[in-house]
Picture 1: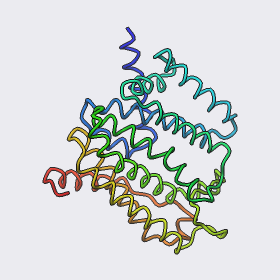
Picture 2 (picture 1 turned 120 degrees about the vertical axis):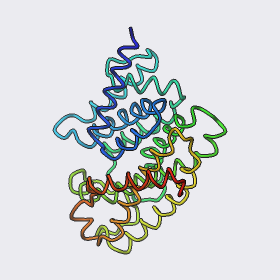
Picture 3 (picture 1 turned 90 degrees about the horizontal axis):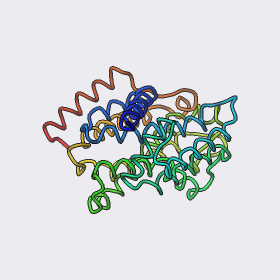
Length: 278
């Protein structure tokens, strides 16, 4: 009766997604039923790994993270884990051959336990790839259902979308990253931190990512296109707010999208999607 256990594991991953991210939860609900469970499994796993290194202050984060990775690696051999989040994820890893992407992701999460500054462009881009691009690639494997030609056609766009989302998150969370986690991700910042000049450089870089990503989004299979498009529109709106905000405001607060605006984005995006106004 492992099917019952697997079903309950996927439900746990869904709960994690709904608890930690209203925006991604909204997008995932718009995926086809054949796609939705696997994306919940991916999100639940990457979210827990991220939370261990970011949020579990007062606990031995190194031990917790290494235990988490050890449990995951054992699950690959056993094809089961009593941790339901890992159990759901390992099944998706095997089905879509996500082993290398998952390993790259875990390496970058482990780096957050020790590395606080990414002072070179190379280090910054390596971190972005392992912490975000590979998540986009894992999801793309699911979206195209292992169609190798389609995956190769869209993988650059998926990487750029992951990069854009991560960079926007870094900019939105700048204050918390610096003050609570002691981290600085952007390599072009001066000792004085964020200013309007380097903020403009960061946003120009994000705009380039989104331009490439959009070309891939409109080529996604119907089963996943609307959900990804909604997430894209949400982050586009968040970026517009960050563009308007002075660097001092970003350094001293957190730019947010209200729930009402999220509903508006959903409605408008759905209409554009149905009318094929891409």
